[in-house]
Image (cartoon, rainbow, N blue to C red; front, side, top):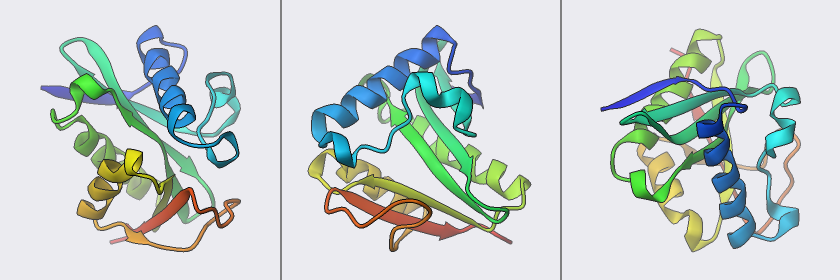
Length: 154
């Protein structure tokens, strides 16, 4: 069973996932196209981080970053390879959406990569009815990026 709960980036288990997330992005995308949050920057990021815990270990993370009063961003989504297929990503996205709705947000957007390395992520977001969209917030057009959004208001 996978348990989702708020996560502290200073927790060694959570830190391990953050480091893996940054390393994955760095391995597959040029530095100028990476939009992940580095470990030392979480405190000032405004991101509420969730962790997915399976058999006592953190296996994934996802964050909610408020952008405006009504718009939020799904940020830093990552599940370690050995835990993929356990449902952690689904539970993380559901938790972020619930929290965004609880905060009165009406729209949730995200940025992910355009390369094959991010194909599974894009497929997952499509299953949650995220639609492709133009860049939002401070993002700019980038051939390495894909932008998606979903209306979450009742």
